[in-house]
Image 1 (tube, one colour):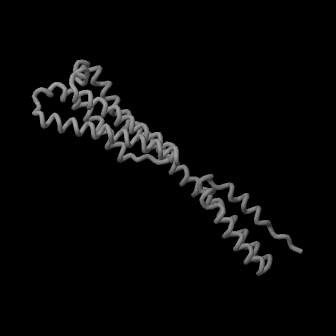
Image 2 (tube, rainbow, N blue to C red; image 1 turned 180 degrees about the horizontal axis):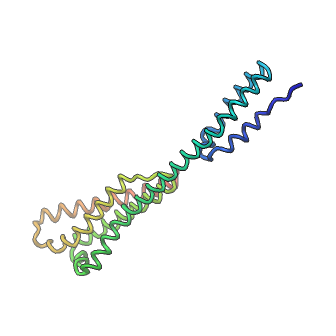
Image 3 (cartoon, one colour; image 1 turned 60 degrees about the vertical axis):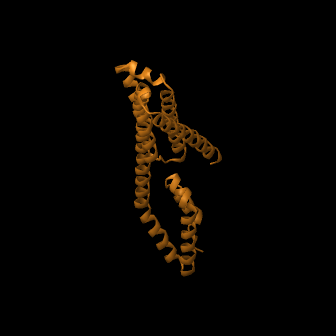
Length: 205
């Protein structure tokens, strides 16, 4: 009696694929191959041999392709993560550091009025929200670069406009001061809500 290769051998071959690919398609691949093997056994050992030879011939090319795609995906994710950190955290913080080094008195103006304090709080919370998004993206394997870039731009505006608003607060009409204050308060509340939702989603996820 001719002994055919056992289906368990194919399960071992599936383990040669990258872990993520194996987790997604390993069971499906094994089920499809086992079905082919069962059909080949009904035709006799030559059909079984052809089935195995065909599978083994395709294996090296499939492995190279999947490992290349896995490497490319990981490289793209690392690039996105690096870009998120630079844009979301590095640029706003470097701008403030540069302003402190170049004109420390300008930064001190940030805290000379209520508008300045609100803009400073908005800046810190925008940067904090970006940090939370980057941290969550690292856990999930994806980075919302568009959202992070938008928040970083808002943080840059707060860093530049905060001291300027403090210096011109007495010159602004009361209606303008009220409108700007409401806008900054809304930004602060939105950041707090965003950070809370991000942390909650991370815990439940």
